[in-house]
Length: 150
Image (cartoon, rainbow, N blue to C red; front, side, top):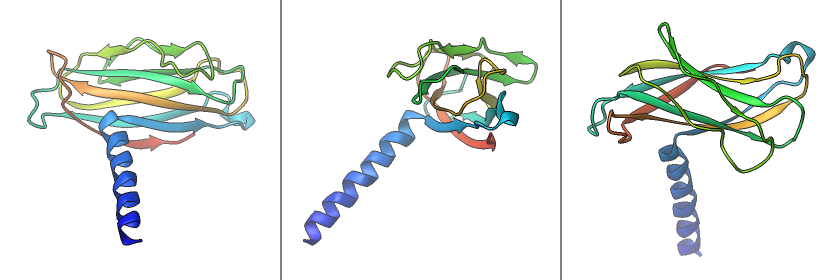
């Protein structure tokens, strides 16, 4: 019996490690009338974890069920520089939006996930995927914390 518990614990821990190394974050954008333009914000820090100096942040988003009128987009800023907004135009499928980059080196980026049509009410769920990368595209240090939850 103890071996089964240990095996289950190992599989659960391995699953969590896989999520962490994938640099994904799931969230929900509110459904209240005041949340029509809801935006979740994350502070993403790019650092050299031994893989090389960070040069850019890659980002994309997947709009999950329920399949409702508002679609979800993602954008990053650092200082006065902003990425192109990437929008998942097909709600509820298993495919991420087109990936975009913001090339602004090491430091803290502001990553925003929002409803693209701010006048449409309804709750939306999403999974954001992001990675700090070197100039050559190798993954490097990526940490994040949510700073706004709507």
